[in-house]
Image 1 (cartoon, rainbow, N blue to C red):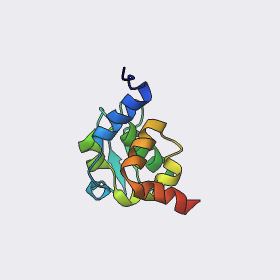
Image 2: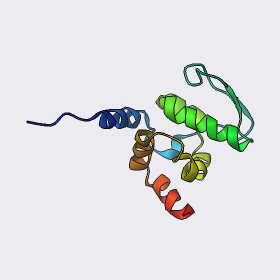
Image 3: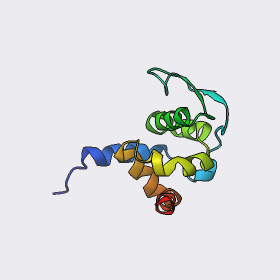
Image 4: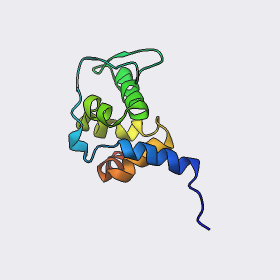
Length: 115
């Protein structure tokens, strides 16, 4: 009898389905204020100044956790994501982290390079 996938497997698969095919698809803003729609930033702050490190990190945490495929492509920037990843990966859920690192070796490599 085949075993049922665990909750973590299901959550990881949910996040993996949302991922872009390549990090190069991420074409979001790099600087300045950005307003997120309510389906992403449904609790609290909705506008984030990407030139302020704490707000930029909060913005990325929200988009990674709540974003669907089109949101990820629209609101995340490849270079910022790779640069933030060594710290950002410690602030997001394990399922999100494993989905992204499993799909994009470049993110896992950025962690090793930062160590």
